[in-house]
Image 1 (cartoon, rainbow, N blue to C red):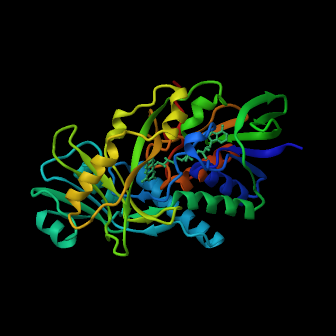
Image 2 (spheres, protein in one colour):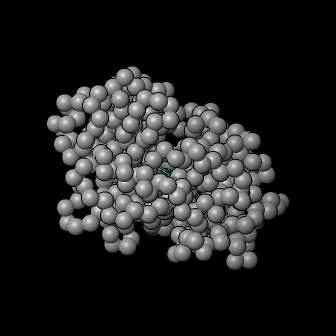
Length: 394
Ligand SMILES: Cc1cc2nc3c(=O)[nH]c(=O)nc-3n(C[C@H](O)[C@H](O)[C@H](O)COP(=O)(O)OP(=O)(O)OC[C@H]3O[C@@H](n4cnc5c(N)ncnc54)[C@H](O)[C@@H]3O)c2cc1C
């Protein structure tokens, strides 16, 4: 017997969509592989959420992002309560740059304030003195400007996905651990072929396959998606006294390619150790041009120089912190040509929910809600119009 809905991809977006479908009383199956145990030997697909920390950040000049993230909080809290799996906590964010520097996006101070006023995002601006008084553990260059977001947050994306899937299963959803290798349109339904050779069928399919969306060739036309390899660096925090820091982004200089350091508070990883997850801006130099380059990026070690660079930046920023060993954690971000995720039905049986644009975890619950409504052919609802999420093809 065929299923009503199959969601392909069990990342933050697919898992959220599955939960919303199941909560609406729909029969849903989610298909996606487990995280590989040995990344360097894995010959299947990977995901962009295989990590312990993602930032929740509302201080932004991008109104759509702020609305999606704010609306996701309600869903996150509901899921935590229903499943007993905690994955979201409030934690401050701090952004620092040279006082005279601004740009169109991350350091668009006026734009951030305007959106913050309209959507009630609390932020505090600090100069040199305020920065050193509030964050004495840091050493910022003199002539810096800082923006604190006291009600930011940290999300554990692995646990978020686990919780969303548990919530979907509690409402009758089913999870199949496998990859989808083909979709065959047939009269009356659609056949979903799994890597294990079996096939299942559905009335409707939602594709939420992240960076692998075009490479998987499950849809007939390529979507306009632009992939970048990111080298996250895990810097070990030894001993009991772990630096108490906000999630910080610091830009050292006003030149277009000035170095940038991003660092999260110490988080415990599956090996039991604590790490500061940090990164430079090297992802802008690592476009993934070919489908065949995606999996090798995940199997590799990212940009070889980044661990050393990141450790050097952390030493400068946190002079009392003695970094332990550092190693790379390769990841990938998928940008769309509109800057918004694509959430749209692309034919009478298939819809997509893809394109995290580097903020696909903190916005995932609302994206999943909209995707579930869309694939159920329900009227579009919420403060953001469907037009904003239309797919663009390459
Ligand atoms: C280093 C780094 C830092 C980031 N920081 C943040 C942050 O601070 N805040 C934030 O909100 N976002 C952040 N992001 C972005 C965020 O992680 C992504 O936007 C998010 O993971 C996208 O979710 P997704 O469900 O679209 O894709 P994914 O997480 O990639 O999930 C897609 C799923 O589809 C599955 N899949 C793929 N192909 C198939 C197939 N053929 N069959 C079945 N399943 C398939 C995969 O296995 C995977 O489970 C960051 C990303 C990176 C790389």
